[in-house]
Image (cartoon, rainbow, N blue to C red):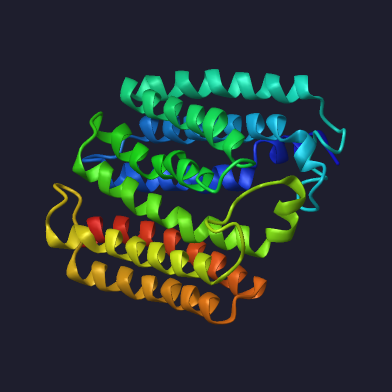
Length: 287
């Protein structure tokens, strides 16, 4: 593999770009006028922060990654990148990320720093100790959507709080679905990713509950309780119908409880959060 490929892997480029997409959506929702400079700073700063978190994560879990099929070929366990090289990337990305987000405003840098700290220092160590790790990991995972609004407004309030809640609840069915179909592989590394510890009916019930809460949180802006974050009736109906797709696959998982059903739920969750963000932005500018 090339150095570029290993760099993409250590920073999880695909995941990092999807996180940046969430931040961009949040920025468009919060911005009164679009500032290209701020948008570019948010993109680069966001990528630096997520890339750093992923690099720290792979350093900490290098020995466990070597035990699992899906991670054993990552740069560090495969021996293509040293820990020192990965740590250098992580530190440089951390410093660059904080500095870049600080140029936007101090609050954006603060929330970005909180995100990387929780992900690296709390979530990552907890993954081998308790299923509560998913709850902790949902906090930094939910920050990017709200971070865009904070970058646009330099303030935290009900609007970015609502964006945070949407992506916070969404994390649970998404990551539990992944934990379900990768359960056997995660066991090799000693990771506790499912709420009951097993891919069983109890886990499926909790997945359904959090999926429903995700949909409820997503349509709350239509009722006018969320300040300047608004959603038209048409937008809310579209979001609700998209949510029903995810709810359907959650019930399918409860019904048949197979890795394939879990993978379908995971894919539907990605489909949902991506289209939700597009609908929210389109609704703001078109309604």
